[in-house]
Image 1 (cartoon, rainbow, N blue to C red):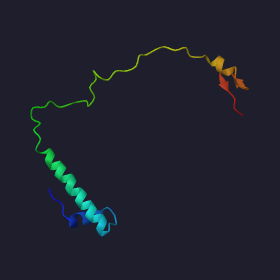
Image 2: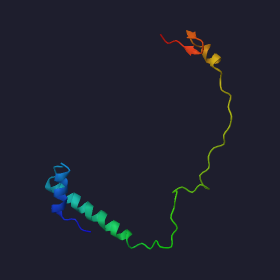
Image 3: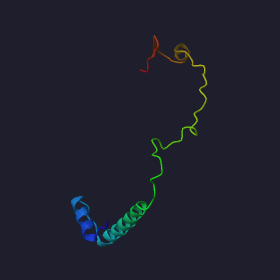
Image 4: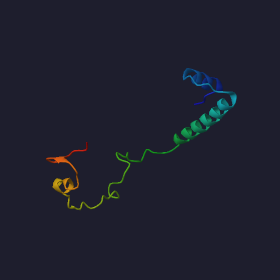
Length: 92
């Protein structure tokens, strides 16, 4: 697939971009490079490969140990509050 400069210019206009000549030339070169790279993907032989449903190998993905810790009770926190009503801290 090839895109010429006129098509890029029309695309830029339809997207409300204002491109000068240097920007258009740069975009043209980058689009050619990208399309060449994508054409290279067409040459890869992937017929014998199994599809991946998840990109992460779960056997390698280990989680941390779940260790129980002591959590302070609300009463411990309320000891430091100047004003409180029940289990709620009054700020004003």
